[in-house]
Structure formats: C-alpha cells, structure tokens
Length: 340
Ligand code: UDP
Ligand code: MN
Image (cartoon, rainbow, N blue to C red; front, side, top):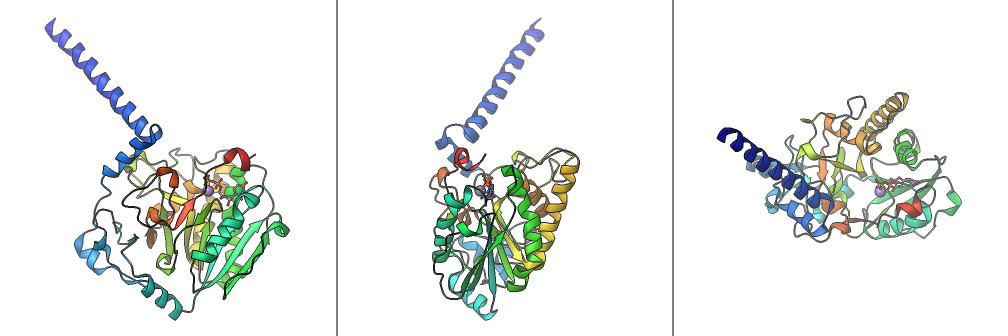
C-alpha cells in the first residue's frame, strides 16, 4: 500500500517537473522576449588553445581567436568563427587588394520585396560591403526596369538579371539555388572570384569586409546559435533530401547569407537545387525550404569559415554584450505585406 502511495507521489512530482521544464523552455523560446536572453548562459563550447593559436586565414593573416574568450571561435573541423576583435580589418583589406579580387553580391527582389527592401539594401551595401574592393552586384528580379539606379562607388557595378516570378513565395526562395547555379556558370562566374548570396530583407549597418571571404562561408543563425544541437530546426522527415538525424548537424546556418569561391558555390547550389527537385518529385517540401537544404549541404561539406551572428543580426532579439558590432541587420518581417 505504502509502496503504491509512494509511486503515485513520485509520478505526480515527475509529471509536474516535466510540465515545468516544457513550460519554461516554451516561454524561453517563444514567449516573453526578455527570458530569451537566458539562452546566452547555454555554453557554446570553446576552441582548443592549440588550434586557437595556429589558425591562419588567406584573407586575414593570423586570427586572434583568443580575443573573444566568452564565445566559440573555431569549429571542431578547424574552421574559424569570425567575431569582432578576432581579425584585423586593415590586414584583411590589404590581403584582398593584393589578390586583385572581384567580389560578387547576389540578391533577389521579386514581387513586393523589390519596393520594400532593395533600395536600402543597395544603399547600405555601398556604404559597408567590401568598400575599397572591386564589387559587382547581381540583382535578380522579374521587373528590371523597377530596380533603383544610383551612382555607385569606384570599381563597383550593378547588373540586373530577369527571372520569372514564381507563384508561391516558398518557390521564389527555393528557385534562387537553380538561378544562382546558372549565373555562377555564366557571366557572374567569369567576373567574380568570390560571391556572397544574400536575402534582400536586411541592410548593412557596419563594415562587412574581406575578413568574411573564404572558399565556403556559412552564417550562424542569430536565433539559434546558443541552442543545443538536438533542438535545432533542421528537417527531420527522413523522406526529405534535407533530413538530418537527431545526432547530426553542427550549427544551424542562416540562408540569408552564404558565400564562397565560384567553384564551391557552383557545387553548393547544384546540390540544393537537385535536393529540392528530389523532394518536389516526392511531393514534399523541407521545413525551412532552401535553408533546410543548405544546412544539410554544410553538414556534408563543412564550411571553411563561419561568420558569428554579428554578421547578420536580428535587432528583434535586442542588444547582447557578445554581439559587439552588427554588420547586417534583419529588416522587420512584414510577411502580410510582401508575401501573397
Ligand atoms: N524573395 C523575393 N520575393 C518573394 C519571396 C522571396 O524576392 O516573393 C527573396 C528575397 O530576397 C527574400 C528571400 O527570397 O529576402 C527569402 O525570403 P524571405 O526573406 O521572405 O524568407 P525569410 O528570411 O523570412 O525566411
Ligand atoms: Mn529573409
């Protein structure tokens, strides 16, 4: 009898504890915004000192990865995670100038995204993106005539490419992979050595220079960089080409910004376009569309460089001591206005 009673009490306590944990994590992740900041106490891990002292980079010279002890500054496969204070911007500038690079920046502005975001994206890119380097912007849109034309800085050009307008916003987003693949195999690929591919619903707010360059570059997602791997919003449906099992995945990367050499991006975009096509043929669509496939790609082919969330920050999260110097900021999401 006593045993039964004890078991029942224990069960009740267990259930309460379980509900408490679920409730708290729910609040933390989706509820009271202030509570979200508690996630900074979830440790990101640390870069082993031996690696920290030795990591070099073709574009930044020696990195001072020890300069940011409160955050993770390298990955388990030895790629640097670039935080403010870990690189010398002047050194990066010199290295890039010596290599005589042309850097591409691609952006899609289809439908109402054009009027809503493109002008600010381009204007702030002129102020902050690879200033002092040769830059070629590629804007993809269904309405080339509507693209704002402003005088550009020296050594900077704008090219506009026409694309068809997909009916669903998800398809516009996913079609980017196929279009980019073709562009990288054409004029863009001949003109530039390195390319960044970005969402248009954001704007530059600080210097975004050659320290971000590498053979392949992935961006830590501002909303997920402290989360335990198991909770990351990867595609989990095993039928999808983007699926990751619970013990897979390194970080959750943000598809609003990725980059690399032309050859590396040709491979990345081919993989994602093919994987999306496979899913479509099976009548399924990955949870976060092209972002899910990008995350699968970077799990299979580790990025050579990872950018800290300082490079693409969401002001909605608010200020954080570890986010010293945001370089790109998400524009407020106005889905009702821009999506059909
Ligand atoms: N996009 C577009 N028109 C659309 C849908 C998407 O131009 O109708 C482009 C645009 O560059 C946008 C990107 O695809 O920034 C990704 O879509 P969105 O930013 O809405 O996705 P989210 O960042 O909210 O996941
Ligand atoms: Mn976006």
